[in-house]
Amino acid sequence: MKTFRRILLAIAAATVAVPALPAFAQSDFPTKPIKIIVPYPAGGLSDFQVRAVAEPLGKLLGQSIIVDNRPGASAGIGTQVVATSPADGYTLVFVNNGFVITPLVNKTTMYDPVKDFAPVSVVSTSPMVLVVNSEVPATDVPSFIAYAKAQPGGVEYGSAGTASFGHMATALFSQATGLKMTHIPYKGEAPMSLALRTGEVKTLITTPSPQIMGAVKEGKLRLLGVASSKPAPLLPGVKQISDTVPGFTAEVWFGLFAPKGTPPDVIAKLNAALVKVLATQDIKDKFATVGATAESNAPAIYGKMVREESARWADLIAKTGIKAE
Image 1 (cartoon, rainbow, N blue to C red):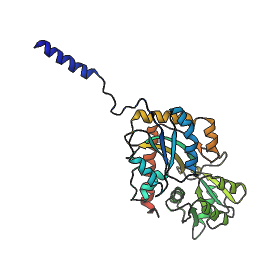
Image 2: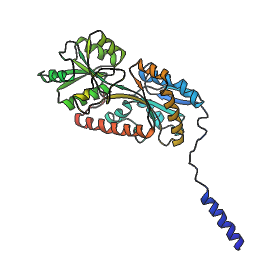
Image 3: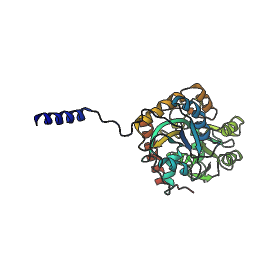
Image 4: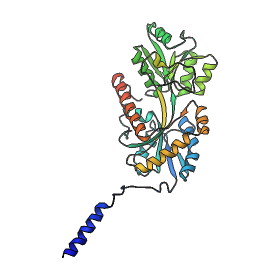
């Protein structure tokens, strides 16, 4: 009997001594191709960036990367597909700030950017810029604010659509400066840019796209400031808007997310590979051609960034009543 008891105690001790293995450990990840869903049309800025990193990322991970465009419902369709996909690291989504903004302005959106996703890493950032029609008598941010305050009816500003990031950023600028500004939405960047060049609207806060910067070089538009949190390397010498409007920043970011519950070791592998790819000069040069800076960060830092941005835009929406069309 004593011998039997000793055996039972030995088994129990051995069981306690064996460390618990992670429930979903995937140290051999990946063992099959990885799909990255882009919830925007092919040919856009998101599509360009993810396709630029897909091949080198696949080589590092030892598996091919499949890019799958699923546009629609303000990026909600493709994003929702990933939110409900298995949390195994084989289905990811490549998004921008709209990922955070859409659920705030459209209550029919079927995902929560914080609760339904696991951040992998930011991929690029592109600071917004404040530009005006060349007929506006302003050469910097302070003189633009003075000009706008002197207009009895305020000034008109354009955006690529209601609740677009440009709309949100300019509404934030208006709130921070106390300026009276009237929003005129357009259906995309091309008509928005044309409206500014012709003087139909007086100003934009927008991305430094080739179209916008080309018009600046031609003298049809004037660049007054950049909405970055630090000097923008792709816009040397351009003053930050925050020099005049303390704390004002508006930067477009693109990044990669996995479904919530994806094992930490899988997220870590994806992050490590992405960090290496984004550090290469080839990717930095490719991104620079579209006004973006290749960047990366840790999943925890990216998650904090998303939570803070969600709170920031939620506060603006509550104060302005901005809603999706």
